[in-house]
Image (cartoon, rainbow, N blue to C red; front, top):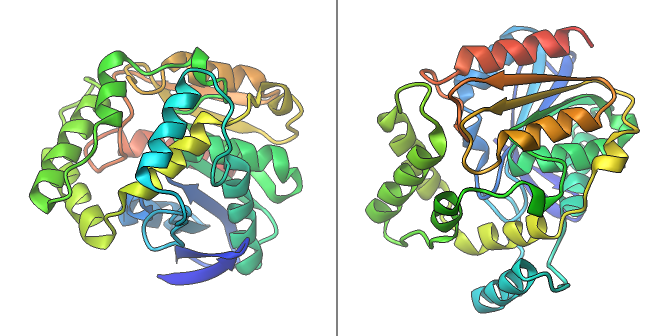
Length: 295
């Protein structure tokens, strides 16, 4: 792995494949490090002729941490935003999209297929709006077009998402494994070992809860991108499960409906699931490869 200087911060990244191939940039979700894009998943894309880049968003993993606001201040702003008050936040999804553009600059990549899951999908959509000349196509996985109040999680999922994770390692692993199971969906058996290992590896690599909270402030203040997505000139692939408790299927449908040229791929029984060898791995990767192969 390596560090890129991007938009005034350091971004930790890793690449697979040959720089001479078309690039596909993988953007992770809220509080999730680059390892959520499993190396075997990345290698499959690379083996099919693509230069794959995965990275840590700002404030998470091994990228720059954005200090300067206490957790108490973060929570106060969060609850003010929940009740509709205007608040200033440390950074926005626009800033995170600019981080992404800066990473491409650092790697001397002019254009890329941009793929994001969950919050990463929000960032990918924002990137497509802000940097239309840098994108070959958009892949948005279990995201929505930015109207937060229209696409709410279930009560159980919201409570689980807002519950603080234990600081102690074993407690954190148990907490995150339960959350992954809650969000997973019921279409396929839950791979507990894979998800426990993902939680353990994430904890050992970088445990940093303040960054997750600040990223959530960026989500709460995002714009409705619908009118801007209607002007997109590149094709999009929207992937969503029909059993997602965090971002309902209507969010994926709204995203696809806003983009002039978009394919909506609905995966039966999938929730807000991490791509793993035993869970929709082939279906997601094959759909992405077919989409980018036509661009």
